[in-house]
View: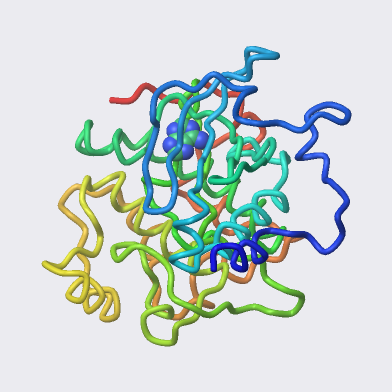
Length: 312
Ligand code: ADE
């Protein structure tokens, strides 16, 4: 039985090896080429481990997926989708974790990713309680910049949340975990099937099992709320009760929530996905998100070279 299921493993139609599998001419990477260190994260199908590529000394985060587990849980296509999404996004944006190489052995798939040494945004928010307005603006701008790049390449993330926003050595954002990512096929504006985390899931996904680029904007609204308020926009005593609140747009801003930020979040947390700010932007037109007063102080030209505001 395992022998036949093994046929279902990632086998591209053409057997041509992509360059992503060839770090330098004709050599194929294996786990032996890396010195493995601490565990950075653990998911249900994978573990992320810090590792040094012995040949160059460069450090990476290697995501290791257990093949048997993927097969048993019928998640091989999910792993493949993650790889394909990361390949499609390429190295074109520093706000998105870049996939350097992939390889496999009998037991595991290995994704060699950018290392983000300062961990998850979630940890920062929990540790600080909430973020300063300056920090929130800076991170919101970086998320928007990365999201617009991704969406212009017809990729939807579908599970944006502070756990999937990593911080690199300069405390800049790197979006990760494209296991729920979706590449929209030509003319396909909406994707089906359930994904996501209760607190950040959009009403259209709950009501019509439908996601689009705009669902990532809904999640952005939830994230900005959380960075400022230090708590979820929508939180019930169970996932079910959280979803009820999302569907009825049942959330309130705490006292003292910045007025521009309030307007920004209010324009993202809109039930109709087409009415959300930035939802109908075309790649060539100016971005209403970027031009919102909340982000007026952002210098978009130097966004990825400016130092991050102090985490206070
Ligand atoms: N945890 C999960 N992915 C990671 C990465 N790429 N860098 C650091 N920590 C991580």
